[in-house]
Every structure is written in structure tokens, then in C-alpha cells.
Image (cartoon, rainbow, N blue to C red; front, side, top):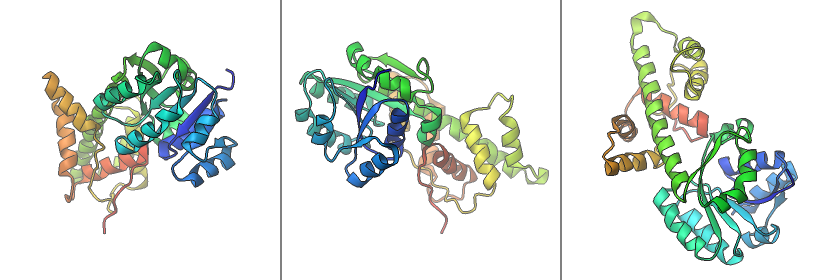
Amino acid sequence: MSKEAIGMVGLGRMGANMARRLHRGGARVVAYNRHPEKAQALAKETGMEAAASLADLVQHLPHPRVVWLMLPAGAATAEHVQELLPLLAPGDLLVNGANAFYADSMNEAKDVEARGIHYVDAGVSGGVWGLQEGYALMVGGKKEAVALVEPFLKILAPASDRGWLHCGPVGSGHFVKMVHNGIEYGMMQALAEGFAILRGKEEFGLDLAKISEMWRYGSVVRSWLLDLTAATLAQDQELQDIAPIVADSGEGLWTAQAALAQKVPAPVITLALQMRWASQGRDDYAAKLLAMMRNRFGGHAVEKEH
């Protein structure tokens, strides 16, 4: 492909690696971060361009500009959108890559599109492994808006023809990502509970690391989450230094609320969410393993026992 240009705003765990993958894939990346030293360090490492401000970023991009926001959902994203709107021109594109509530994205799109600027909501999965393995990308927006970002989706995805999908209108990308994360809650909870039961059968002296490694090959429950579980258990089966506290980032709650609104029974997802809430302060092996799974796939912080 020709050297398409994109502005990447937000260089945290996800944003920085996405910028790296885009750059490696042949895109021209202009990177910006609220703390300029992050953008400067990334530019020095990769050779991509660092913008000193949002205005500088916009000036360095050809029209129609594509600006991808990879920021925390809520105030941080909203503030950057409001700062960018007067800098962009009709026909430009804003991509919201946050783990945002889909209805908020739909409302945000109305403000953006009222100025003639395109809007795409992008759910992104892949965590800290996405740089090498590629990301799963769930996008919502009008056909002409998605067409502007498609060259970059093909680079970010595991392959140009798979791992990304135009799900539907604005909001659908974040809705699909929300449900994806709800499913993730249930899968993680089931794995953690199963290994807690195995560990509890003390008279068998079961080796959880060997069991998890064996299950990775040919079993019905083989999965990436099992791969991460096996890697964790290979290092430390006891998890004595891990606090049994499992955070939730919102998507599980939103999925449970959507299920209630649609009258769709979702007991596994709902209970998995409630188990995270109940995890604080309990000496619970399953909660410790859940915390380590989140750390492995997303780089999320793990609290240590004091």
C-alpha cells in the first residue's frame, strides 16, 4: 500500500504498540501524547514523527486526515475530541478506540458528524500481545468513514483479510467489544474456578502447571486464556504473593445491563462480574488466578500481598 498517514493520540500500553505496528506495516504515523516525552521517545525508537500538540499533529496530516484516539474512555477522550474538532476539517475522520460505552459513542458521533467530520467507534482487543500477533478490531460507522480507516485496520489486524470487521452503524463496534469483554469475564471465571477445584483435591497432589499445559493441546477448553493461565502456573502455582483482588473495567457491567434491558438470560456473565466485586479481601485462589490472567493479556496491574 502507499504510505498512508494516520495520527495516533494516546501512547499508553495499547496506543504505543498500535503505533509501532502501524509504522512497521508501512504507514506514516504521527504520534501525540499529553506527556510529550512519550511521543519523543517513541519517535526516537522507531523513526515515526512526534507531534508537540494536537494542532501540530493535525498540521502534519494530509486531508482527509485520520486521527485515532487511544485514550481512557470518558473525560480523557471527550476532552481530546473537543480540542480536535475546531482543528479538523469536513471530510476528516475521528476514530474512538477507547473501551467506551456504545451509547456514549453514538452521542459523541452526533456532535462530530454535525461538523461534517466522519466518526468511527473501534473496539480493540489483543492487549499487550497485539504488537506481534495483531489486534481484533470491531468498528462501527458509515461505509465512507470506515473506508478511510480500512488501510490501517488491515495493518493492525492479524491479517489484512481477517481479524477486523465493519460491524454496522456507529456504536456497533463498541457494543460488540462490550459483549466480547463480557464473554471474556465468564471464560476467565470458569478457568479460575476449575483450577481452584483441582488445587483443592490435595490428596491427589495434582500439578496444575502440567495439567494446564496438557490441556493446551487437543482439549475442548484450549484457548488463548488457557495459554496465559498455563504460563502463569508454570512460574508460580501457589500465587502466594498475589492479592485476591480482581478489578473490572466496566464492560462486564454494561454487558449485564444490556442483557437485562433485552431480557436475555446471562447468568454466567453476570455472576462472573459479581465474583469480581466479591473478590476484595478474600483469600481466594480463583481470584488470584483471575488477577494474573488480566495481567498476562492486558498488562493490568496486580496487587501484591503485604
